[in-house]
Length: 328
Length: 274
Image 1 (spheres, helix red, strand yellow):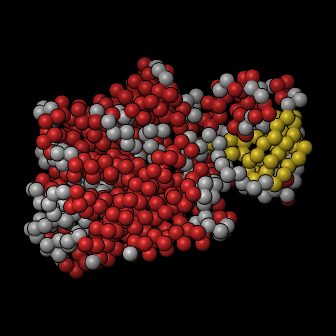
Image 2: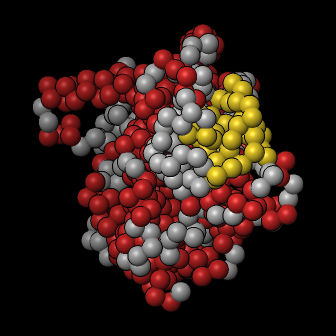
Image 3: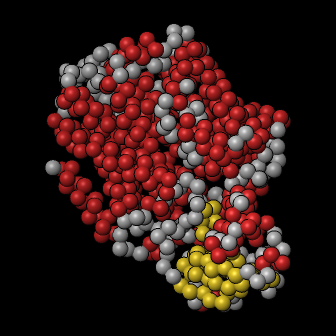
């Protein structure tokens, strides 16, 4: 009932305001709104998809199944997890809710990080679009896939050396995980059967969107604001230099915040201006980390953990980019 | 109550805002202002699925049991027993500062919700403007280079050429010989030439690869002294005419379109090119 009223109110608001002239706003502001809105409209479906799959994994995949399928050795487990993205062609913004679902299901923190970093690159849609954009030219496709795989596992291994990986999680999320693991969490409360499970799924959807959507909206607004405020010329001008092209494209990847499924098409347009190492760094770094992803990951990891994560991924991507430039 | 709004209703309301915005754009055929056509179906399907979940949430959440201990912390995960506080700060902070923090969070949430409503539902949808053209370097090699490789340009029928195609050819520096006798009819928005804004404007489009965030402007220069009197910046026009050497000495392009006619038109349903 309340829902119907709110929904009707929103629809009416939209219909009324549709007739207003956009020219009333100053150009800069108008473009800021358009750009931020386009990031939201592009990402929101992926976030929904990620949340839905995460709910499905939490409530409908039996725990025994996961434990039987997964290898015992930690490194092998992480390798397997980094390939899970092949089955789940979700763009990186949908991976954060999914990684949260995995952790609730008992995955360790380093494992979830490995998944988070690997899945946007090692998934069929990304591989196909990268192939369509670049073919086998200059080792860009191989550099992206192999580089993404190695970096994700490297970061996972480094974080697994941490004495207390759980301390990398925000206190709230850690508590939610512990509760779920104790067997009294929302995924088991209220009995079995379809209706109680559907009720829990609806609650989980409400809770996950409550955590994710504010982060997504803030991240999109930041991405839009940077786009309006920062001129592209500077970054593009640096493109031809073997060292600066890698750095410039990583910064571009960070601020532009587009999904890994399509970033290959975007950067293809720059193909002639930039060296291949820069492009590989763009495709690897941008898929793993960008302004929108950081606001999303902030819901789950502590700031200190995120700083380390970003620094590691950035260093590794730099090394990868320089390496490709040397070879190409 | 405030905690429950934070932990559950916040997401449901924000989802609903996003879903209404997407469905309305799809129904009125305006999704193209924001995203590439290849995402239309996926976006609409996910919006509908999201809508189903929102409906389910409206049906179930009001009846869901509150936490046994009566605390429901910001992230919204129930914890049936009272000794495992999700927040951590409850232990250290006094209840006064915890409550101040609660007020702050509520205010921030309200801000995000209002911002989302304004951006997604109140501001009428629009294309990008010349402000973004200035920011992104018109006819950057980036935007036009891949088009130049496409086979349709090397022997194609020039009548079908888009703004992007002509911009690529001009960029490649095809000589005057190539352009002799060729004419074009192009629709785009008006944006001034940075070097000679009095006499030269570009009939321009944005090239979109994924969503409007990656839009790259491309354009064909048009020589028409005093154009701004009749065709304001950012208005849409259809220009037809032949190509000629640029009479303007201060502007960069070597070859411009000399318009036989410039007509004001409505913005097309698909304002971007792909």
